[in-house]
Amino acid sequence: MSIGNKLKIVICGKSGLVGSKLEELFNANHNELIGLKVRENTSVESIAQQLESSDIIINLSGTTILARWSDNYKKKLYSSRIDTTKKLVDAMEICKEKPKLFLSASAVGIYASNVSHDDNSKNFADDFLSLLCQDWEAEALRAEDFGVRVAIMRFGVIYAKEGGAMQKMLPPFKMGVGGRLGSGEQMVSWIHIDDLLRAIEFIMKTPEIRGSLNFTTPYPLSNNEQTKILGKVLNRPSFFCVPAFLVKLIFGEGAHVVLDSKEAYPTKLLEHGFKFHYEKFEDALKSIV
Image 1 (tube, rainbow, N blue to C red):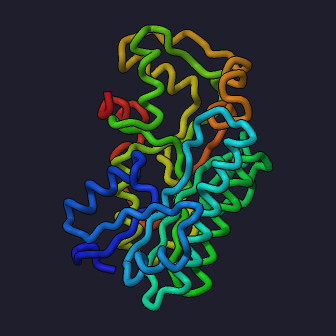
Image 2: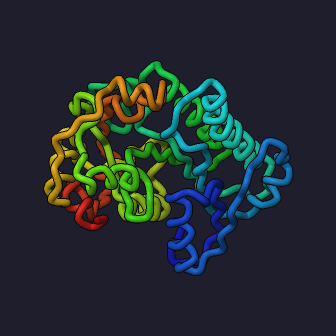
Image 3: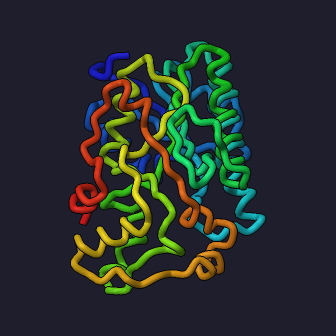
């Protein structure tokens, strides 16, 4: 696939941070871009009409994960990812001219805590988030059965000026009340939005890449280290602490997202020659604030 030629690209879930940035990128390159909304009553046949003859499908569907997980919200988290992805893959299967590449989101939350993981790790957690990611990936990988190249993007925490995790982290630090979450010992696997976009372009241009990939910098760091760097760059105190019990009180089961240690490395991207612009958190932070 030549990135220089005009491509037909379909994005499911382009209203979020990653989708909106991809829209800017692909429009700047004069590609044909289609934003696809898949609702509960959207038929597979109508989806297939929009996917027909597309070069690339990018699946970013999913209700935001950083929230309080009530039973009803967990159902939304699941259906917005798994049910949507199932419809997408079913629609691809009935297309006469199938896409060449299917990029589908997932998360490093799939992995077990407190151990390191490369892209090939099968050491998964057994909590709700991990099981959600496992089912999500399994649905996406079905597209391989009818010849579509599938790349699973296991996102770490995404940092950007325009939103994402940094939008929630910066205000307390700027007010002088920033600090660690819980013990602060949990490892944070992260990526700058610019590197995330570049990694997607890299996969588009590299047909040998398929399967699961960690979209994370080669240098994860602990929440304690992250907190100190935030304080240093912003020149603000960073000695406060949000106790784990308070995080759990606010987010319930969703507290796993910020309290669990996730240490993932982008082995596959590096082995294929991808170069990160922002490997270290301090450099990434300076570009954002």
